[in-house]
Image (cartoon, rainbow, N blue to C red; front, side, top):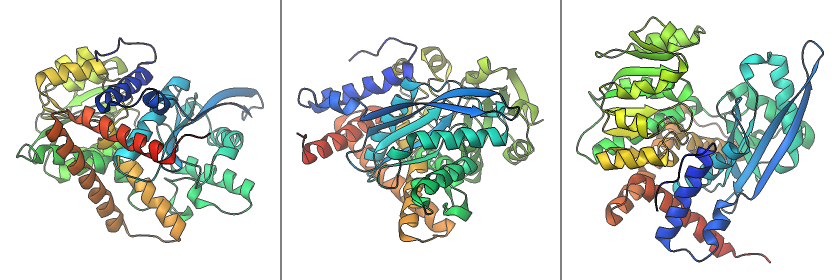
Length: 426
């Protein structure tokens, strides 16, 4: 199949293309792949609130349950101005593939509100969250659909989600959401889990080529939770972070950036890494964020938003390994360019699966009314990542497939097998 032409809804086009490609490789029966691609349920809800000054305003939100054949829906809630129906469907589809690839007994879901949380006061943000939960209440639950944090949301937002749902049920239901504060049944290790998985994925990819991440030069796009933890953990493994970018621009240092200083600056509230006083400012402005990939490096970690790397950026990229910390950061056209150049791409549905793996462990703790220690949680995340990579790498080698295509095929096959076993009703 040829790569699809870029569209305004690139993320949805990309995930559908990759699922169809996998379906064609598997030679699925007519209609099966279309059933797998189509979301099970798409909710669009109106979210009116009263602002602190007394004026009324309305936002639009979505919750998509893409595939719940293998278990309850699982997926984050995103607060960002760019959130729309198509993006939410694409992210939910990716979650379906991710949980299937990782062999977790969960489905795929995603939610979001088209809002800039930075423009809301804490009280307004709480009102938005509670109204959103009220609108999708009937479709949430530990055995139905379990949200988690995503771009623009955090543990506090998840606490409001839990509370609003629990009010409707009549008692505390910690298992309705993951990524909660520890005091409400959250899991130790959750903050670092996605970044830990990204670094583990990088390490595993290097090991298959007879090397390690020690001494490797790494560039990172995005210094939110995922990028920050990936940087901290990679440095702990002996790597050098030679470039970091975010919405403010790009900073670099050939000798390696002082990641601890960057983290402290972020905790103190700087808007961008370019304001941290760390390294050299290479460029300013969000339009230059992808320029970080042109810096001399060995490993690139795109950890920001989707579609960050298209064919142009792929042509500039110097790294030999690309580990997708974000959801859908590479377009199919970028994939084609990198494959032609022999760059190893570890896809998002594996590379950033440390987060959903830890979320699953949080659900298990909530069900059993237990609290595991952080070392136990981290070890379980790493063990699950390694088991999944062993299957992925072996399948890739056996069938001469890229990691991207192998991951998509394995994910689609798991979904198709589950559909076949359960049957079609009526």
